[in-house]
Image (cartoon, rainbow, N blue to C red; front, side, top):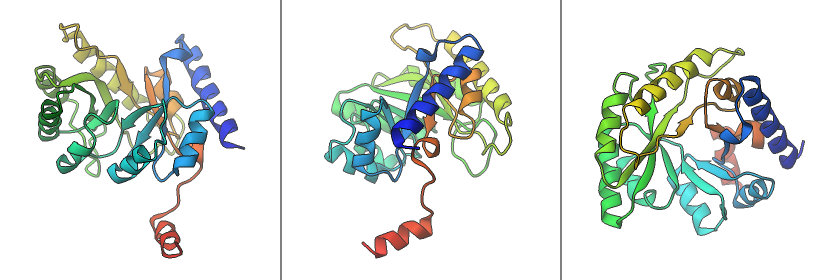
Length: 242
Protein backbone atom coordinates (compact mmCIF):
# COMPACT_ATOMS: atom_id res chain seq x y z
CA UNK A 1 0.00 0.00 0.00
CA UNK A 2 1.09 3.56 -0.63
CA UNK A 3 1.32 6.14 2.13
CA UNK A 4 -1.87 7.72 0.85
CA UNK A 5 -3.68 4.37 0.95
CA UNK A 6 -2.45 3.60 4.49
CA UNK A 7 -3.62 7.00 5.73
CA UNK A 8 -7.02 6.50 4.12
CA UNK A 9 -7.29 3.00 5.62
CA UNK A 10 -6.46 4.19 9.14
CA UNK A 11 -8.96 7.05 8.85
CA UNK A 12 -11.66 4.61 7.76
CA UNK A 13 -10.88 2.32 10.71
CA UNK A 14 -11.17 5.30 13.06
CA UNK A 15 -14.47 6.29 11.48
CA UNK A 16 -15.86 2.75 11.71
CA UNK A 17 -14.90 2.44 15.38
CA UNK A 18 -16.48 5.82 16.11
CA UNK A 19 -19.74 4.96 14.34
CA UNK A 20 -19.87 1.64 16.20
CA UNK A 21 -20.34 3.49 19.50
CA UNK A 22 -22.44 6.36 18.16
CA UNK A 23 -19.67 8.92 17.86
CA UNK A 24 -19.04 11.25 14.94
CA UNK A 25 -15.75 10.43 13.19
CA UNK A 26 -15.00 14.17 13.10
CA UNK A 27 -14.56 14.07 16.90
CA UNK A 28 -11.27 12.18 16.53
CA UNK A 29 -8.01 13.63 15.22
CA UNK A 30 -5.42 11.32 13.71
CA UNK A 31 -1.99 12.45 14.92
CA UNK A 32 0.75 11.05 12.70
CA UNK A 33 3.65 9.94 14.90
CA UNK A 34 6.49 11.10 12.67
CA UNK A 35 9.47 9.87 14.70
CA UNK A 36 12.43 9.06 12.35
CA UNK A 37 10.49 10.21 9.27
CA UNK A 38 12.06 12.54 6.71
CA UNK A 39 10.77 16.03 6.00
CA UNK A 40 9.61 14.85 2.57
CA UNK A 41 7.64 11.97 4.06
CA UNK A 42 5.99 14.37 6.51
CA UNK A 43 5.06 16.69 3.66
CA UNK A 44 3.64 13.76 1.69
CA UNK A 45 1.57 12.66 4.68
CA UNK A 46 0.15 16.16 5.10
CA UNK A 47 -0.64 16.33 1.40
CA UNK A 48 -2.51 13.03 1.83
CA UNK A 49 -4.74 14.42 4.57
CA UNK A 50 -2.78 14.38 7.84
CA UNK A 51 -3.68 17.49 9.86
CA UNK A 52 -1.56 16.90 12.98
CA UNK A 53 1.95 15.53 13.49
CA UNK A 54 3.44 14.24 16.72
CA UNK A 55 7.17 14.30 17.43
CA UNK A 56 9.06 12.33 20.10
CA UNK A 57 12.48 13.91 19.83
CA UNK A 58 13.31 17.58 20.25
CA UNK A 59 16.26 17.44 17.85
CA UNK A 60 14.20 15.89 15.05
CA UNK A 61 11.34 18.29 15.67
CA UNK A 62 13.65 21.31 15.51
CA UNK A 63 15.22 20.11 12.26
CA UNK A 64 11.80 19.61 10.68
CA UNK A 65 10.65 23.04 11.86
CA UNK A 66 13.73 24.62 10.31
CA UNK A 67 12.86 22.74 7.12
CA UNK A 68 9.23 23.92 7.27
CA UNK A 69 8.15 20.29 7.00
CA UNK A 70 4.90 20.62 8.93
CA UNK A 71 3.37 23.37 6.81
CA UNK A 72 -0.13 24.14 8.07
CA UNK A 73 -0.47 20.94 10.13
CA UNK A 74 -0.72 21.18 13.90
CA UNK A 75 2.41 20.08 15.76
CA UNK A 76 2.28 18.06 18.97
CA UNK A 77 5.18 16.99 21.14
CA UNK A 78 4.37 13.46 22.30
CA UNK A 79 7.66 12.12 23.68
CA UNK A 80 9.30 12.35 27.07
CA UNK A 81 10.34 15.98 27.57
CA UNK A 82 13.33 16.83 29.73
CA UNK A 83 13.16 20.11 31.60
CA UNK A 84 16.36 21.35 29.94
CA UNK A 85 14.70 20.96 26.53
CA UNK A 86 11.54 22.88 27.40
CA UNK A 87 12.92 26.07 25.88
CA UNK A 88 13.02 24.40 22.46
CA UNK A 89 9.40 23.27 22.62
CA UNK A 90 7.25 25.85 24.43
CA UNK A 91 5.77 28.32 21.99
CA UNK A 92 6.82 26.21 19.01
CA UNK A 93 4.23 23.45 19.23
CA UNK A 94 0.45 23.55 19.38
CA UNK A 95 0.25 20.96 22.15
CA UNK A 96 2.66 19.29 24.57
CA UNK A 97 1.00 15.95 25.26
CA UNK A 98 3.54 14.60 27.73
CA UNK A 99 3.67 16.76 30.86
CA UNK A 100 4.43 14.06 33.41
CA UNK A 101 5.51 15.81 36.62
CA UNK A 102 5.11 18.98 38.64
CA UNK A 103 8.73 19.86 37.88
CA UNK A 104 8.08 19.74 34.13
CA UNK A 105 4.80 21.62 34.51
CA UNK A 106 6.60 24.40 36.37
CA UNK A 107 9.31 24.54 33.70
CA UNK A 108 6.68 24.90 30.96
CA UNK A 109 4.96 27.66 32.93
CA UNK A 110 8.27 29.50 33.46
CA UNK A 111 9.19 29.34 29.78
CA UNK A 112 5.69 30.44 28.79
CA UNK A 113 6.03 33.43 31.10
CA UNK A 114 9.43 34.25 29.61
CA UNK A 115 8.02 34.21 26.08
CA UNK A 116 4.67 35.76 26.97
CA UNK A 117 2.71 32.81 25.58
CA UNK A 118 0.12 30.37 26.88
CA UNK A 119 1.14 26.79 26.10
CA UNK A 120 -1.52 24.12 25.61
CA UNK A 121 -0.68 20.89 27.42
CA UNK A 122 -1.94 17.44 28.33
CA UNK A 123 -1.01 15.59 31.50
CA UNK A 124 0.53 12.18 30.83
CA UNK A 125 -0.94 9.46 33.04
CA UNK A 126 0.83 6.15 33.62
CA UNK A 127 -2.47 4.34 33.66
CA UNK A 128 -0.99 0.83 34.03
CA UNK A 129 1.63 1.79 36.61
CA UNK A 130 4.50 0.53 34.47
CA UNK A 131 7.92 1.19 36.00
CA UNK A 132 9.46 1.57 32.54
CA UNK A 133 7.19 4.47 31.58
CA UNK A 134 6.93 8.05 32.71
CA UNK A 135 3.70 9.71 33.75
CA UNK A 136 1.80 10.48 36.91
CA UNK A 137 -0.45 7.94 38.57
CA UNK A 138 -4.22 8.22 38.15
CA UNK A 139 -4.43 9.19 41.82
CA UNK A 140 -1.99 12.09 41.31
CA UNK A 141 -3.68 13.45 38.20
CA UNK A 142 -6.47 15.53 39.83
CA UNK A 143 -4.02 17.46 42.01
CA UNK A 144 -1.59 18.15 39.14
CA UNK A 145 -4.55 19.26 37.03
CA UNK A 146 -5.58 21.67 39.79
CA UNK A 147 -2.07 23.13 39.89
CA UNK A 148 -1.99 23.46 36.09
CA UNK A 149 -5.26 25.38 36.13
CA UNK A 150 -3.70 27.94 38.47
CA UNK A 151 -0.82 28.70 36.08
CA UNK A 152 -1.40 31.68 33.76
CA UNK A 153 0.94 30.54 30.98
CA UNK A 154 -0.36 26.97 30.76
CA UNK A 155 -3.72 25.87 29.36
CA UNK A 156 -4.73 22.38 30.42
CA UNK A 157 -6.48 20.70 27.51
CA UNK A 158 -6.78 17.17 28.87
CA UNK A 159 -4.98 13.88 29.45
CA UNK A 160 -2.70 11.48 27.57
CA UNK A 161 -1.82 7.85 28.26
CA UNK A 162 0.39 5.11 26.83
CA UNK A 163 -0.92 1.72 28.04
CA UNK A 164 1.14 -1.47 27.69
CA UNK A 165 1.79 -2.87 24.22
CA UNK A 166 -1.38 -4.70 23.17
CA UNK A 167 -0.58 -8.21 21.94
CA UNK A 168 -4.22 -9.29 21.87
CA UNK A 169 -7.32 -7.55 20.58
CA UNK A 170 -9.10 -5.69 23.34
CA UNK A 171 -6.24 -6.06 25.83
CA UNK A 172 -6.05 -2.34 26.57
CA UNK A 173 -9.71 -1.46 26.45
CA UNK A 174 -10.10 -1.42 30.25
CA UNK A 175 -7.17 1.02 30.50
CA UNK A 176 -8.84 3.30 27.97
CA UNK A 177 -12.10 3.09 29.90
CA UNK A 178 -10.26 4.02 33.09
CA UNK A 179 -8.69 7.02 31.36
CA UNK A 180 -12.06 8.19 30.09
CA UNK A 181 -13.52 8.04 33.60
CA UNK A 182 -10.54 9.97 35.00
CA UNK A 183 -10.87 12.57 32.24
CA UNK A 184 -14.57 13.07 32.96
CA UNK A 185 -13.98 13.30 36.72
CA UNK A 186 -11.30 15.97 36.34
CA UNK A 187 -13.25 17.94 33.75
CA UNK A 188 -16.30 18.08 36.02
CA UNK A 189 -14.17 19.94 38.54
CA UNK A 190 -13.00 22.55 36.02
CA UNK A 191 -15.22 25.55 36.67
CA UNK A 192 -13.31 28.22 34.74
CA UNK A 193 -14.45 28.18 31.12
CA UNK A 194 -11.12 29.70 30.05
CA UNK A 195 -9.69 26.22 30.50
CA UNK A 196 -11.30 23.97 27.95
CA UNK A 197 -10.49 20.34 28.66
CA UNK A 198 -11.46 18.66 25.42
CA UNK A 199 -8.55 16.33 24.59
CA UNK A 200 -8.13 12.69 25.53
CA UNK A 201 -5.07 11.31 23.74
CA UNK A 202 -4.78 7.54 23.78
CA UNK A 203 -4.38 4.70 21.32
CA UNK A 204 -1.59 3.83 18.92
CA UNK A 205 -1.19 1.54 15.91
CA UNK A 206 -2.06 -1.65 17.79
CA UNK A 207 -5.08 -0.45 19.72
CA UNK A 208 -6.41 2.87 18.42
CA UNK A 209 -9.82 1.47 17.51
CA UNK A 210 -10.50 0.44 21.11
CA UNK A 211 -9.28 3.86 22.23
CA UNK A 212 -11.82 5.49 19.91
CA UNK A 213 -14.56 3.22 21.25
CA UNK A 214 -13.72 4.39 24.78
CA UNK A 215 -13.66 8.12 24.01
CA UNK A 216 -10.27 9.14 22.60
CA UNK A 217 -10.26 12.45 20.76
CA UNK A 218 -6.62 12.08 19.63
CA UNK A 219 -4.95 8.86 18.46
CA UNK A 220 -1.20 8.76 17.86
CA UNK A 221 -0.39 6.42 14.97
CA UNK A 222 3.01 5.76 13.43
CA UNK A 223 3.63 2.19 12.25
CA UNK A 224 0.19 1.75 10.67
CA UNK A 225 0.89 4.84 8.55
CA UNK A 226 4.60 4.68 7.82
CA UNK A 227 5.50 1.02 8.36
CA UNK A 228 7.90 -0.43 10.97
CA UNK A 229 10.64 1.88 12.14
CA UNK A 230 14.23 0.71 11.77
CA UNK A 231 15.91 -0.72 14.84
CA UNK A 232 18.59 1.19 16.70
CA UNK A 233 21.21 -1.08 15.12
CA UNK A 234 19.86 -0.44 11.62
CA UNK A 235 19.70 3.27 12.36
CA UNK A 236 23.35 3.29 13.40
CA UNK A 237 24.35 1.21 10.37
CA UNK A 238 22.56 3.67 8.12
CA UNK A 239 24.37 6.57 9.72
CA UNK A 240 27.71 4.83 9.26
CA UNK A 241 27.00 4.54 5.57
CA UNK A 242 25.93 8.16 5.39
